[in-house]
Length: 476
Image 1 (tube, rainbow, N blue to C red):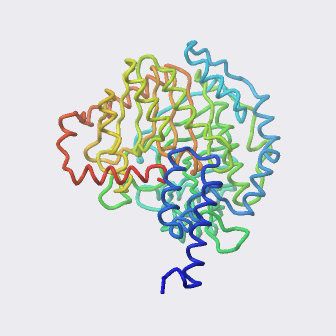
Image 2: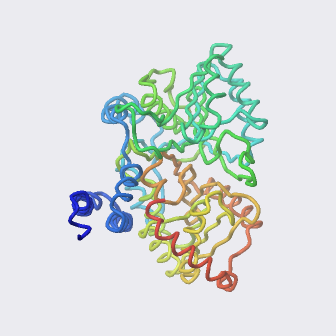
């Protein structure tokens, strides 16, 4: 008897071919070709397994409850964005002509205006960041708003949480958003903060309820602080001890921000707070009249499931195509899509100094192997690669021609481009670029150059593992 004569076997074959045929119509829609190819291969060779994985992580699906809020988010935030559009001083940019296309893209996005009159400072250690937060929170008069992917009450951050409790006790409104997955190990302690007057919102909370269930790996990866609508912080630093993971020591960078652009950070927090709690923060106490604090022109650039365009990815492409002198990129996770990889190699081949500064050891072995799979062709294209030998360099910086700089929370991978809620601050002045160049030089001094000869010495087993990991790049 033929095995396919069984009704169960026939049904199984029918289901497999139904999945394969349906995948041809569904998977390629609004998806990069490499990602579509990877999913189609998985679905064709392992239809049942592929379908389960696709339903879990194949689509940036948010809950129905959140989708309804997102659908109304633009209208809900309209009073805020209209107020920002009318605020002064609006930025002029004053960029060299070669950056005209980048400037035009940012302006046509229209979510937030480019503001002049800002002052930017750099903070490169948790001790310094915690000390600044304590000082600013103790001076807060009306509200303290914080968003962190990972937050924990530990020996490094205890002074910050104590300051938050003191602020709440004297009548200051303190709100904290933490990612439900990133902070899951600390959620019990964080939820207890509500008894001390601190409102805690969980970003992308996991739920089994049909209206609230969503793709399980959606993350709010932002790191933002806004105090009284006048002082802000943004960058890559979580509110946790830098050695919170065994065997890893994180090195990060945060920006201290003063001036009108702080109101854009506030608008992003207001949008996140509305999505997680249903409460809209749109009154004048949260959006005071902007005050000029310096000479920097900059604009806040959020991305994520609630924003339809992968703006940070497109901005990086624009910078790579516009560069004529040098592009320096600091990132922990470098798993680029095809267009970004091609743009970086093309820039290097036309004589632009292209340099990647990465950690030598990552906290995710599969991502590390996928990242390393690109080194061969990057070195062949004369892209300079440096790697930090001892610390997990977690800063995210892109510096273009000593003029334009982008600092934020987004890694250079598909997840940050299309799935995570991220934030980047684009700065236009050469003054801020010079300070970031000094920071990059500090990294460069402790990050040895990866040479072609060194890379060719890796074993065949490592090469095979890297090549296999690269097949998963569009899914990471």
